[in-house]
Image (tube, rainbow, N blue to C red; front, side, top):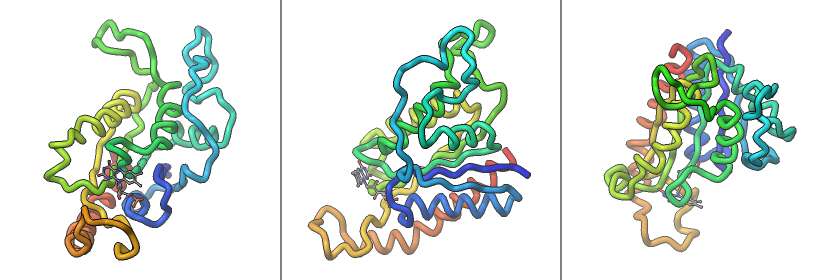
Length: 220
Ligand SMILES: Cc1cc2nc3c(=O)[nH]c(=O)nc-3n(C[C@H](O)[C@H](O)[C@H](O)COP(=O)(O)O)c2cc1C
């Protein structure tokens, strides 16, 4: 049975990012995979410490970060998975710090500083492909995302996964409904009625895309 790991790199367990990830889980399960879901904010860990144990000559780390902490077992599961889906809210134009810390820990031990003399670029260390789906949820409306450079700022994370894991694709959910009750907060930047309409009309379509992503990655 194929194994899929789903990672929530946002702090809220039942909001937009989590809803998208739970749909991806349903899609992967419908495709016959066994899914494990982790909320990364529940784990105590930091990013890469630059110890370079993974890049040393004769390194025995085999793609798993040498640091022994809460997420080592999750890193191992990711490397043994048939697909990974990771979701994050956009915080100040980037993924969350937890997403980046996890990304450093997962990807740097599988990164190389070795030139691929046949194909150019850097040699891949993984001798397989682990298809990875990355879901970003954000307040920003779709038509503004390009103006604020999100395809580049967020896309660069996808490029790194694509190179190291062998395949990555991205899904954006724009204009998310951020609060359970807008009336309780100081906000005049967003129109609650517009946000509610978007949540009711567009977000279900985004959830469908997340379902399809989960399903598709299993067969990638
Ligand atoms: C600290 C913080 C920073 C944020 N920065 C941005 C931002 O730069 N761009 C954006 O579009 N949304 C931003 N947002 C909004 C969230 O990305 C958006 O509401 C997201 O869907 C929240 O995900 P969640 O519902 O899973 O928590 C920010 C939210 C927080 C809490």
